[in-house]
Image 1 (cartoon, rainbow over the protein chains, first blue to last red):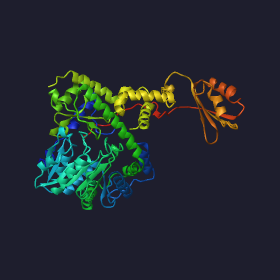
Image 2: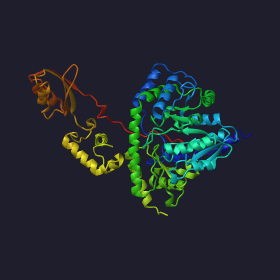
Image 3: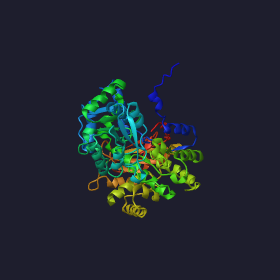
Image 4: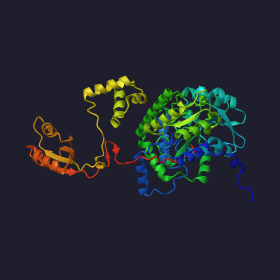
Length: 388
Length: 165
């Protein structure tokens, strides 16, 4: 029989995180600090609206772009939070999670051979989406000394005449790094100078602990060259509802909508009704969750300091990214040994790109009680290790 | 963070966990530990913090006791309103709480952890004989689902599955 598998798909690597957690789920009494989703339940009033929509018989497709009422709420939200004005009719698309929007944007923008600059460590899907869209990924290794923020000089170095798109993943998974207004302004200058387009993945935008998140799209001259991607999973603890959105120039949204209608039709109807409620009445929930995450973040950083684990202070998302280089192990070995000896699961930094070597990702989407137990085990583990 | 905000943060944290380690709380709230200790004792003096209780699910113990909610209708007194009658009721040690209520009745009185006999004796001999009390309606709690913001008898299980992110 012929080999029926596409060559392009074969080049994609399976995700390193998944493999690791298959082992964890088999292990009894293992404590995981690996999960990248909120530990909170979706607030009840949001769930209730979803249920109510089912009771009312809202079980049909919505329009391809999503419910207009939801798109209006999103436009209102972005105006309120970022001072950004998007037309809900032709500059907004509701997608199945932020992930779908990333894929659509890559396919709508890239021609074969176009280069995409992907700062790493970062979320695992940018590179596969680029490759499947026929683009060529150019990896930019972010540095700990810059708190994993993207520097304009680094960006300049990676630009060629084929560069078309920059992925901007902030607040960042896995490092917890953020980009503040001043950082973004410098990057925006380079982007405009080289006539690039930006895919700004802002899924963690509500989880920013110092200053409110700033979108690069809100900077002068950037709205027309940015596709803003966000969603409901992280802000409202709605991961299982699979709902995200993209906002950007009408011409790009139009092309994305075309792809979306052929492969997805429309995002889940129940989720869309629930999301309207989230945007209308969910501010307090977001505030409460953010403040709980922030307490845990401060708690973790303090514990790390006490056990001599060095870590830059991250101000976003719900991850910390401590350095483990001085223990003389690769990230993967460190995680495997920690799991074997103390039954604590954290994710090797290398799961998010080679530049994650020497680091591990620890999620604080766990209760303080859980974090405490895990940290005391990590502490015991580190005590037995020699530092180099 | 001004003093008021600090107080609110402390109160919010200890409302649901009076046993929290203050050193840990200091880290979580970004308020020095000495200041937390200070503020707490000040708030105790000022009566903002009235006590530290334990939330117990008595249904899970062997206790055979019940909790009663009593709706009391009474005549307010000139110049005193309901204060005097409320005081006469809350001074009984077996009474857990007394609230002045708007609507169909005036005072809501709760008695917790008592036997049926203790409650009936109290209502018959002490409460209903008060001069300004017009009527009492006693309700017994059959099951507590949620108390003080905590859902009782719920086991927490992490249902999140392994996924690539």
